[in-house]
Length: 198
Ligand SMILES: [Zn+2]
Ligand SMILES: [Zn+2]
Image (cartoon, rainbow, N blue to C red):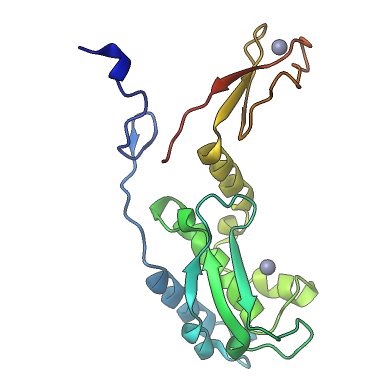
């Protein structure tokens, strides 16, 4: 058996040891329809053009985006100070990694958030935050940080390792000897990190 060819990371969709995550991705359209349905039943939104939301083209952000999870892009020439309705929106893009069973609750919330932008609330002002807080799934509203660190780990390519205390940090770049361990002050060593995705 040729040991050197033994795969360290098999591409089976194994994201955590022992947990097999099925790569069933939810359709963005289905997700969107369920969010719109819930918004139709919100009395606070009854004066707004909620039905128009289903006409907005939906898309996906690039897969290695980390800080941006979703975005509502207005059409050319539309200013944030204009009166905004779903007609003013060119598209809404969602992070493709949120579109699976694991993150579906967060994906729903992301769409809700972007749909509020599409209904005329272009900034994260007081009224926007009040409406955003009407989303039934309070935990989902707090999942942004978790999702960011999930993405950072997926994109990590290098481990910065302290040769003395074995402290590890995941980073997307080499440290090239420029960083030291905070505890031991020894220069950190670059170790090629695990690749979870291709
Ligand atoms: Zn926003
Ligand atoms: Zn150390």
